[in-house]
Image (cartoon, rainbow, N blue to C red; front, side, top):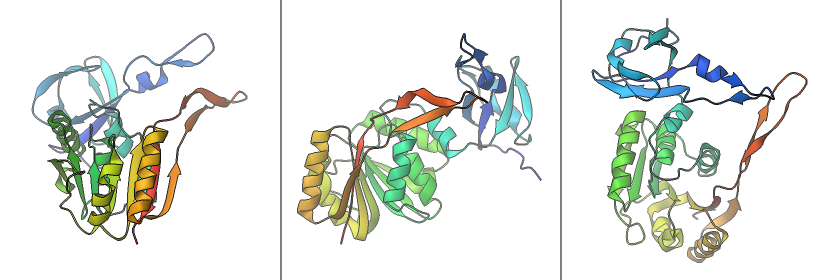
Length: 270
């Protein structure tokens, strides 16, 4: 039996026509606006870009997979995936993209019940991804120095539905970190090497550290400090992502590549 939508749930409205798009001269799809809309079910009429004025309470009692017509547009009601939550969030800073976040989660062995400290919350994209994997018994503690980033990240985490496992603090991890015996520490700010020792102290035995660095110089300084404080299994990776255009008889790689976004330096405490 398909679940019915309740108040305060998060849903995605999917525009099938937007997905199909229009064909250009070479048969390629033209993007013409947003296709998916992430929203929380609440009794409030607001204007949503791409939809118009709309009270999401009209979705209560409907089933996922149903189609609904809103202001002359037809949408499919879907449960949000983790990717939907991140793609649908508001942004004020460059986020750690899913291609990098997935490697951070894998290399830091993040799982249900993990306790993770993140420094440099930004808009909260990695925060939401971490919360998704530690839920429901783990915890993500995120630090940032900017109150505007903290306010936005809190709103995005609340929209994701993972606020019960996330705590966002205003603080400088290069000065102190009160957490102890955590499973992983992830640094995403301009000078992570200044917090490496505090991160080492916060980790439990065999815990993992990750420094996310946009430049080679930052990477070198981070790795140097990781070695100095005693981390082992230190490795640095960079991930590229290229999608494929699949058409019968003429499939090929897409010309657009998600290239360099950051270097990820991993280490482990013994």
